[in-house]
Length: 239
Image 1 (cartoon, rainbow, N blue to C red):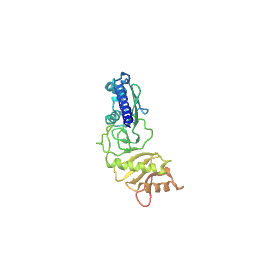
Image 2 (image 1 turned 135 degrees about the vertical axis):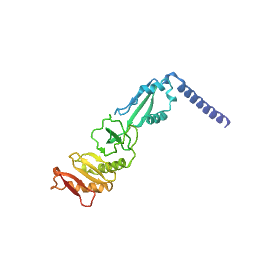
Image 3 (image 1 turned 60 degrees about the vertical axis):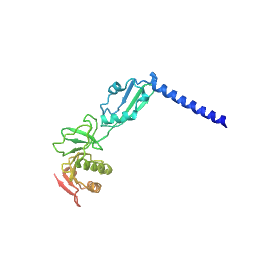
Image 4 (image 1 turned 90 degrees about the vertical axis):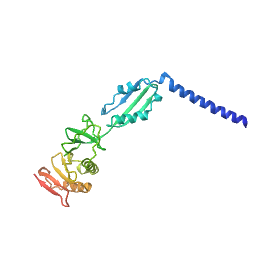
């Protein structure tokens, strides 16, 4: 029994020695000194440059670099990045996969700026395709890339955008703009120029009434200036 205990202790000791030797080898070998950083940013939505990071980390052992901390630092420095996934690639490389924030609308104030679902202002250079433009902000609003817009106007606009996405009524009528000049009384514009006055509540119910209105065969959409959904009976204003 004593012999078995000794053998077990020796085996454990050998394992610890091997682990320590591997740790020392990985931590001190020149073979694992960082030489390359690759930034994978398919959207080209950020200003993260591999060269800037390499100037800081080149020559450091890749196992001594805290990749979680580096990921967090990148997101703090460039808040328009949603995720930065940092991976070690043996023997001497770091790979950083950039996942950008996705714009859901643009705001109009001193130019056009995309914003994501959190209200983060993104670079106007991002290719967004067609997105609704949120208009009606104060002339004093000066959006800056990397900052978040947190006000009732933006929050209500997002609620309306969510309702528009959930309700398929406007699949054939693209929304060109959302007017938040009075955040308690929103309206939005269709690409054909019709203004839809929707207020600030019961968006889904009011959009359903809009769907019913659009389904009427006698409706002459070419001669409509606005549709008011804020009351029990839908009001249609002619041109």
